[in-house]
Image 1: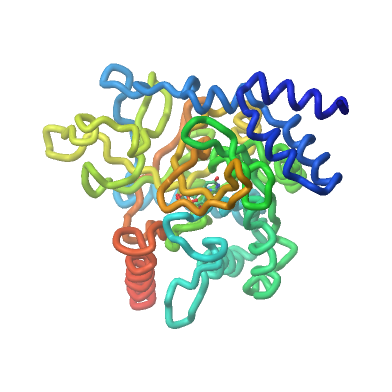
Image 2: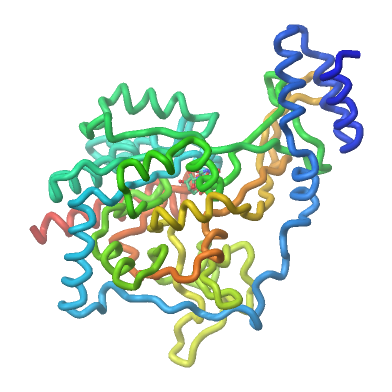
Length: 420
Ligand code: UTP
């Protein structure tokens, strides 16, 4: 037996993943057979087994004993002097080219169900702007205001990189200088079925999915973006998701406040609307900044109120964060925990038949960006107004859908124009 095949067979048998060897046998092209074996030899089977078994997840991580609310600054309550002081510092940083923006667009957007990368979705405005064009508007506006080209990095995944880049090219980068826009791909991990068996995709290859937004830090290092940022003398990096059409990536007050506090990072928060709203909340966990994801908060903690009637944990994390270059460099060398998410995934069964499931059937392994906060000593939380900065596009309809985001977007811009 060929050496490579022998090694792959040993590994698959050791980790009870023999279905991969059956899939290998079904491949007819010699080149594809070799690629398949190479792929097997790059997989960290032990890691996959551990994540599947939940060994790296601490199920009772957040308890009343180790969690407390985190301090925050309310942007609306800053005095005129404070506001102007922070703004001045931030403007100086922006004008001197110290800020870069990263948009995370590597997600699958399964809930929206749009046929294409989420950023290419037409929000349904009279202008028919796509989400990517709406995001570009914020950078074009900042370019005009501060007379500086802000480098923009877009994180894609293997699944949507080509389509995303094509979309920008076809639309001439929506009028933003092409030289300022960079794309990089995030990492991926194999998907497993409910029994922990690695799946085969519809093309007979190992089924993989992007490794969550927490994968950004390692990808920034691996893809050379960290180095690129350094060579451009970037000090601050705003990292946000692709699906908030009211995101403000260039925020002088946020930058100024973070610099003044000598913090390594910052996060924007909005007040949680109700105990059951599906948002994570900032907190302190064992004295360190952290976020409790909505799926991980206990009912008691979610409903707990302060004597004044407000929710005790109410500073919602909206995936709008600012990191110093040093903080990213530090985090990029660390391992973040993986979480399991049950998703619908098309696969090839043991008879070589392609199955399109109606129900979630497979686990995707994801790390979360906010798990990185615990390795930082100090992050600043800036509470902002929901109606000014948060209009997520998550679901096809109902809450956090294109319809609700469109309304929030129109209301905000109508108000802004009437105030001009
Ligand atoms: P979500 O957690 O909402 O996931 O991502 P999603 O993939 O967009 O949508 P669903 O859950 O499949 O419906 C929040 C942000 O993080 C990015 C997404 O593109 C979005 O901007 N993200 C998520 C990544 O860049 N990579 C990932 O692996 C996951």
